[in-house]
Amino acid sequence: MKLLLDQNIRIETLDFLRNLNLDVISTREIKLERAEDAEILVVAKKLGRIIVTFNFDFPDIRHFHIWCDEDGYECGLSEWIFDSNTINLLSIRQIF
Image (tube, rainbow, N blue to C red):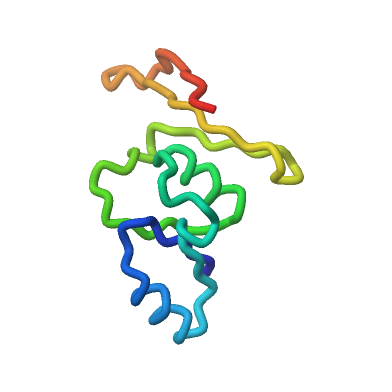
């Protein structure tokens, strides 16, 4: 399991998880401590990591599509808006 700790997770937690021999990095370590949530989502996808956060307003991933090319070098994020009654796709907004 590969983890990416958001900036709101204490450094002591990072150390604790590493002492358990988990593969864990923090947004601070990869210079994302001030990144928007959408960028963190894309980086986590690109790196194959699970985001650990206390951020209750982190984007609802069910509404987003994270894409990467076959090599994982180019990635992006788009928001997919569905009609809740018909489940028809209403719009796609490219975030980056």
